[in-house]
Image (cartoon, rainbow, N blue to C red):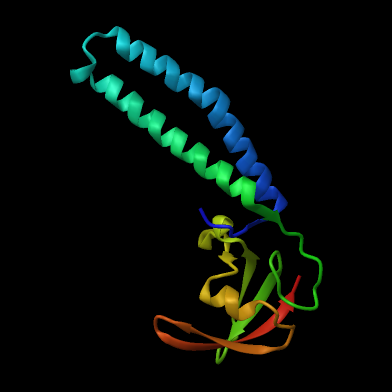
Length: 155
């Protein structure tokens, strides 16, 4: 096990706690009922319902273990400054040679989601942004080569 911190916003921390609570209470009970029903069907060696319930049980227990580790090592981040980019910052950037801007929120790796424009602080773009100020230019390496950008705003 690593001693690395998992950085989460308060909202994500609460959502993971809710998921853990659901899995430990409601989901475990549902799976136990499914297992009991499947056992009642007879020979478990050729019982598809039983094997499926066992697989669901294993997946739920794996997720519970993962959530417990994440929450145990979690450090809740609160964005404190609009002066420089940090975890929790909402950043608007512009690529060199383009007029269009893009907005991203800098989050921990567990919370990253490109569809929601949430990027991890350890992603190439996230790492390049951390510590920068409004108006500052920066570059980072992408699979297609070096990309130069400018920070338009920080919230």
